Image 1: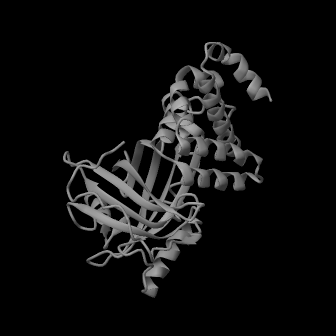
Image 2 (image 1 turned 30 degrees about the horizontal axis):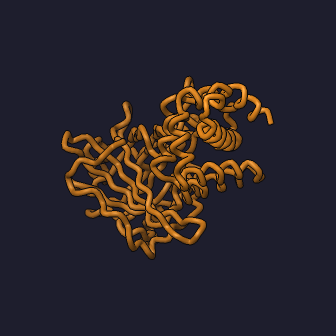
Image 3 (image 1 turned 135 degrees about the vertical axis):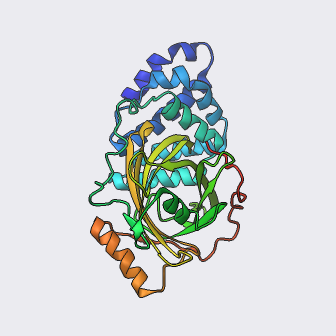
Length: 329
């Protein structure tokens, strides 16, 4: 294979000095990147970048059973067609075997050193729908929406932490996890954070809980629109645009409807999603409320494909402490 010839040439000095384990580890990392490149239609990854910058991280991965299994599993996804199956396959591999060692390797290859070559000039917003089609709600309770009101909706009227659970979502890759608890809160410096804890089903029948933590701030223009950023979530940097489309106008809001879009430039992946959030993870029982929610998504041309299963959330991680500083990565 051409890939192996390139690797043999690039890493000849490494192999000749006895670092065969590192060569094999880098080859496994290269195969992993090629599988991701095939799915996201990105350029072929640079093997010289891996060996030059991430050989040590690849070697640590090779010494770790789960990380090694994740790379082998992902490389095997290249044999699966169509590409949609590939994406599902890769996601399941990550769900089954991801750990800190694996994330560190991805961070080195995709985030820190851009071995895929996709970050420079990448359009993070290419998957985003236009604001005239999917824009934040302009008013709330009969008055223009303000920054303070939009924040209060997310925080559920508190100054400590706003707790929500995804009841229904759009994207099978991002929105349909069971028991997906979303939290908005303030750090000590009064800046906002966002944290999501969600349940992953593994192939062997087991489960795991994943956590994502983002910095949250208002978009530069407009209200009801938030810039959401994570510098290292699962080894990747994410930049996202979140829009508050509609919200329950009762005294204690029982639902909000949101849309988001963004990208992980390190792997050349742009995406979008949407979901209905409620305090208990159940859809509103009020017919008028559901009609209002459906009208918002119909106007946006968005179909919510999945109803999450929030019936068994035993073992869910403890939420961030009220008013405490979230650890943002």
